[in-house]
Amino acid sequence: MKTPQALSALRALGQPHRLAAFRALVVAGPEGLSVGELRDRVDLAPATLTAHLNSLRSAGLVADTREGRVIRVRAEYDQMNALLGFLTENCCGGESCAPRKKIPRTASKAR
Image (cartoon, rainbow, N blue to C red; front, side, top):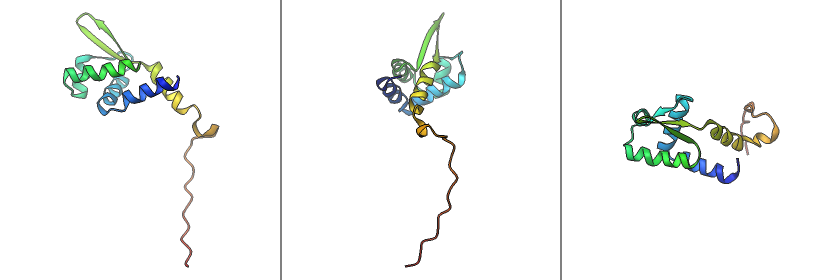
């Protein structure tokens, strides 16, 4: 993933309702959710959800398919994983990212 694509995805996910919708789709798995099911889970008005899905779709984070009268929305896991890879590409300078032991603070010296 290149920087412009990462920024687009981060901008899309930087809004609480879009992040909630995307997380709901990730939890739903590869089957995704119908737009109605997603709307019920994130409790948004239909037009508002549509606008948020358009932003996520534009960033490549979701895709939808028509199944008869139902539109099913799915998270794009490849794009999500590419974003995670971009963010962690140079994580911790090649060293372990395990938390370091906390070093106890020493008492301040009396003056």
